[in-house]
Length: 282
Image 1 (cartoon, helix red, strand yellow):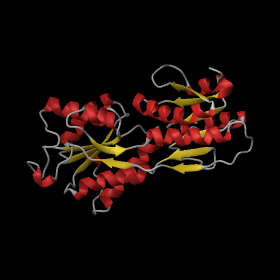
Image 2 (cartoon, rainbow, N blue to C red; image 1 turned 45 degrees about the vertical axis):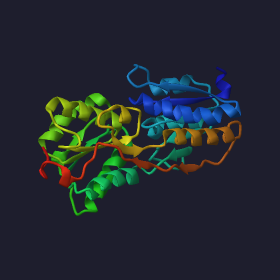
Image 3 (cartoon, rainbow, N blue to C red; image 1 turned 90 degrees about the vertical axis):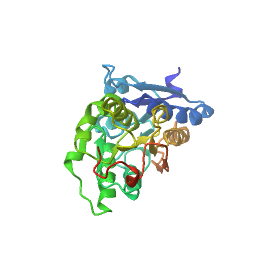
């Protein structure tokens, strides 16, 4: 691959499905413009993102969370003078192009659906603190509770790391707090919660309703299939590709911010509270 005519998609993310979907969208718009795409995900591979970036000689860079808010990485790209797109970046909005969706509104919307269906004791499994999008999703959760006059109960808050294993590990803590519903901050963790529920003899959604975030492939592979936020990863990749195709080789091109819409996908993992066996949860 000719690096001078290619785009580097750099990630540090346990969700390979997320990265592959962004790459798919990126390729759709880069390839017609004669730009190849090289994707490097350093998560769990003993390689540092900063070293990959220093060794690269690409025509443009796309950074996904949490790298899109990593200021030392941003400085390296800026010093090189190549166009950059930051996916779901929350810091420094004036640095490079930004493509994202409203994480706060999406989390608030899906938790709001739980409250509209009668749930009040709603738990959350947070994503890693290194991902600022995790904080936005937590704030959206808190906002949806506040809209019903509810406060966050810390016994209903657990800390995951966006992996299925962390969902399974943290689920017993949440089950013990007796929620009627759980908001998992991504689908992989939601799948882990379903694994733990199956082992504990807890029915989803009969005993506990569950929602996720991303609409990754796992959302339709688990049983019950998962109600979740559909994050438009391919759309974000396409938007990033359009920006880079327009800016590669142009010095001083003005940075832009592009917002893409989200959807709520309703499947089988949520029931009305009145339909559950007990208003007190499990």
